[in-house]
Length: 351
Image (cartoon, rainbow, N blue to C red; front, side, top):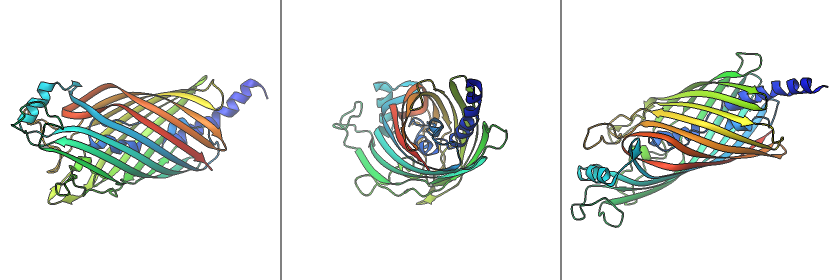
């Protein structure tokens, strides 16, 4: 077999596996992005795992995502002390931090032209916030000064997703569509640590909504490089009303693109992704309060992240991967928290 023939022989299953694994988009991670505009991780973790298997079958994935929202932002910049203090004095709640750790188990089945997956997340979330303005201190809120400071800590099973995909539009399976549903399985009844005050709906483990997910993707190869582009939309079609108040998460529009380099051998593959998400403001009586000064929405925004990462194949159908997402553009409505980086680690096993 000559080199040209060998390359062609490898490329066809290579593209097939890219297409089938790519279609499992970063939908669990998107749930974190839906909790607020600036939470982060919209990463396409599954695209990096192509090449593990060139035959249909099952794949199991276990991923861990760490998001520490500890940076106050307003609009496209870091919020100033004056902005924070003005909003606080005007009666707006000022959040201090939110740390979310998400461990997700995914089971996927792929055939030549279709596939399906079920994704089960376990979330751990801690949060601190400043409540009503404290006239006794009359300055930028800090935990040691504000008498209205409150915190929360919650964990549990999040919202389960069931995703289907189809890649039979072309002979090389390099294009496909995705359709799925997010179920309201996560808890929505957590309180702050005082045991009395209900936690904000946007900070609950589950959104309380049933969402439909639609999307599509394209993949290809150029010499030693593989690439992909994909887009999804997530829309709530039904929501839970709690204590007479409804909460409707804003629609989320996600666009991701990535490139990988295959000349470092079969075991190590460096990758780079560009992640974009636009999230519309939440609505309903339980949505985040409007900006106390402008009356504008207190949720929603646009984020762009650059995510370098790598995948290592350790043998026996097992691979490990890791990414760091770094913000390159963030625009949030009113005052919101954002992370300085997002960390994703995972292991995948094909059968």
